[in-house]
Image (cartoon, rainbow over all chains, first blue to last red; front, side, top):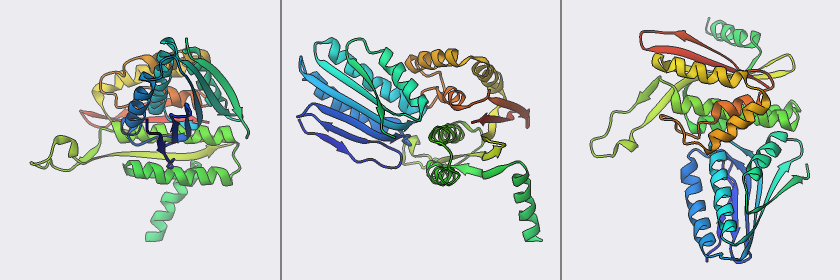
Length: 128
Length: 189
């Protein structure tokens, strides 16, 4: 399927979904004016991809510097989709990269990670 | 005279340690613009990364609370041929960012309807009195919960502010008229 590439803006992260390579990434800051408008197309593309993943492998990297509370809900929904795919037999690795100087983002990553039952969660420090 | 008046206003803000002040109708582009200037000022001040991110995070939540929930609003009259979603609506509030000693403070105020005061008061009191671990647990619970009626976000804003703050939240209400109260919220980082 067609890759999804959305360049970053001041208020929205870059989305780099390379479906052929099974490497998906969200990178930057996330405090969109309208969370649904931004994440809607991201969710649809991911849903289509995951529905066809079967027992395949994929890697998802979150490299978020900052996200507002409305975005946190969207990220949780992304995590749920990945976990569901893993529960159906896919091998899913989720990497949460956090700035070593911001423990709030580390904590948030840990909280998301705790809820993953089937996908494998990795917490990674970003070089400052 | 003119300079004197404005200078007095400026001096009053200055006396309270205010670095940024915005009073008026708030829109998303206002948030973007003031937020950008705030980031630059914090960078110039050489604030550490965690402080910079926390002040900014609190600012975003406070601004979005005004944009979404202030009870004082200006509306364009509904165009007859447009769906109601096309209605233009902007909301009024005041937000200041300043310093108290080494701490940054972000204060926001706006009108609320008086029937919302009890709900807001108990919600904020609960959040203020929680330990860090309890707050973390409640945040996680709310993240998975359906937002309460009337919420336009994830219902996490006050908790996000409390988590980013280094001291307990301060808040207050004062009655304005039969229907409205002024609500003020202060976060120290």
